[in-house]
Length: 140
Image (cartoon, rainbow, N blue to C red):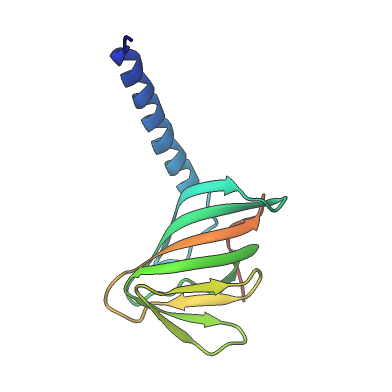
């Protein structure tokens, strides 16, 4: 059996370029973001519910910043990997979520996240949302 290393290398380069381009394009495709909040899309795929998709994003909230009051057209499931953040959901008391903990924000619920610390908060967000709608919409 002969292996064509040149073709394999070319295929690998093409796949890598596609992944870099796709990640960059998805990062640009998100909704407008509040100052101090960075949301970088790292994946998107259809789910078993018709008309919905899962979006995976790396989210960072800068020290002293707020995400800004907003909603999502579907559920947000997030895991805090570094730091701690104050989660403010309308109709609920504020909660402090620490590294290693997770939270869920139901579809359409107005919420905000405040980083009162001196370090950046990092989390992974999974959004199961309606296709074709902005990932986040500012709320009053």
